[in-house]
Image 1 (cartoon, rainbow, N blue to C red):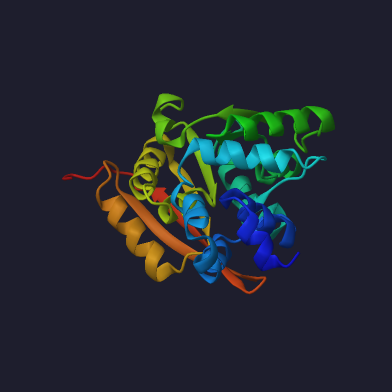
Image 2 (tube, rainbow, N blue to C red; image 1 turned 90 degrees about the horizontal axis):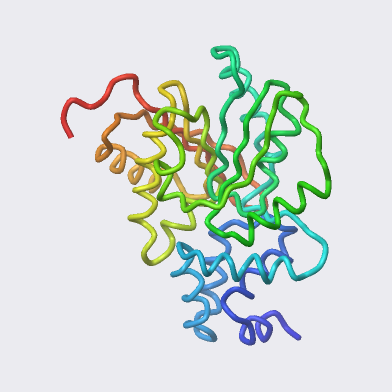
Length: 275
């Protein structure tokens, strides 16, 4: 069966599953959009269903159910895996660990079945407390089952790893103010801003991240979105936040023909005088 006929016969989620199979489980969202446009004349309603509903829990429960039914567990990575960014993340953790006595408190926000959080837990020489959170209960259960079956040991014996079902628009309902050192967002904001009703949710999550981060903490967004677009959006959302924040960007390089960036959002030491 040709690729075109396979796509025409698929559901919207099968389009994404096909991308997973073709890209060794590392998928750029921009590629999904390009594929959608190329095939739109054949299955507009099906592909639009996926693109427009990436902010919905049911979409991801279905995706991870279908992806998990393929047999042996495999981590699904948006964009790239841990090894592509470990040289950026691990020095940040080391620097944070020097300024505190306890473990570095990390949230992998919208983790899906990515190995990012577990790899940090296994690799970091400094003590870390990693929480992998996702809105999909299916993804969380798959991750818990895989972690229990592999019994991976941390590099630092004081490190901890946990999995949590959590709607990330409700961060303040679970994490206390100024309680997290580092929040990692690999594809979560990208999925939201590309969906029909997700932009407001993305802005809400950004503002809550600033509230739960320590003054010395940072939110790192990994994205394939160009700085000309993402920085404008970030700076606009930050201006509407209760807490002031600094926004920066670092180019990570190109992978499979796609350029990736790391956007760093860090709370300022003082609150805004006026909103």
